[in-house]
Image 1 (tube, helix red, strand yellow):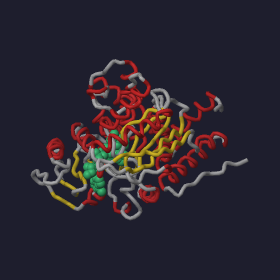
Image 2 (cartoon, rainbow, N blue to C red; image 1 turned 60 degrees about the horizontal axis):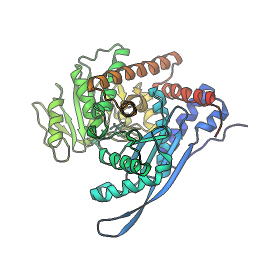
Image 3 (cartoon, rainbow, N blue to C red; image 1 turned 60 degrees about the vertical axis):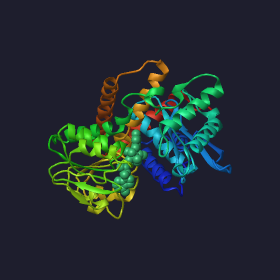
Image 4 (cartoon, helix red, strand yellow; image 1 turned 90 degrees about the vertical axis):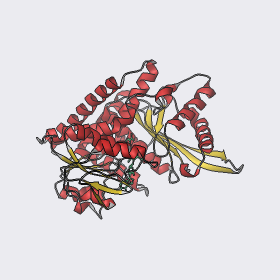
Length: 425
Ligand code: NAD
């Protein structure tokens, strides 16, 4: 009996499934394991009623998906966004399984969300939604079952409301159920910069692996938020020349290299955390998309999914791309870039510093013992470097692209766990 392949009208889920099936076929993975791993273990749909500040009642849809718990508790964010739907949560949970497996941490993949617009909600309304959502998914989350984290539209405050609600319902404090909490409430030092640090580390290890010195290498970074700004900072500190950065206000270019510390201070002080009004000698302000087309060694898309697509991929001049955002290159663009010989470090390897950092927070919460930022960074760097080289060596050995190699390495670890644990429940 051959495997009946799943497809989805949701592009994210369909692309993730296609990548999985292709890698599984290349590995010669057993049909039964392909069937198991192409499905989610658990998909929970809840309604989330909320009383708005004006007294009216609205009901939002909420979801929590655990794709796999073969390697450990499901791990993944909770998104508050109007477009949240079950397929999107399933696609993101699916990708979390491969990201956690590739990272070598003891987690499976999960994701959830509430279809609501946080920009239209008051803090009190957000709190009511967060607490009701937490109460409704309570039977399915726990420090050894499913460990949610922040995602688009959620952050420290939501994690505290989630954790507080569930701890009170259970009559027992359990900070390890949620990660991404503020440092003052069981959060972890080092987490803010972790993803950007990991992205920059992958970029630097990649340059070293191809024999190009980091010192003097040129880079451009799309998106100057949490991930992009720290990636640009770490690269600059290592001697690379970041000549282009961008945010929604446009591209900022300086051929002699940008003053990243100054740009970070500028956006931190801006009321909307933007680069708008940033100045330095030799700076050129360019249109939004220009950052994609700069003639640099490495391009780091750290803003949005689908940023490099069939319409613009042909104009990309960078030789190497390190994906900081999730899914910044569409499958069509991937093929175009491949044809141009561009080498790509895939997102679920490059941006795994975030989830590795979440794992560190969980470890500290379980132990009730906190690490210094230096300890956190030292462990993160070691893991990121090892993971990069595992995928790099495998891609060379098999003569395949890094994205395919990363899928194969991560699928193998989960498949081995399913085999060892057995097919039961
Ligand atoms: P953020 O909101 O802090 O920053 C996003 C940045 O992108 C902002 O500077 C914004 O102005 C910019 N931006 C948005 N649209 C743009 C456009 N069209 N052109 C140029 N810039 C644009 O978000 P973040 O936390 O830095 O996340 C960025 C990406 O990385 C997302 O895809 C996210 O899912 C992914 N990611 C984040 C983490 C994390 O720990 N923060 C972990 C893994 C993956």
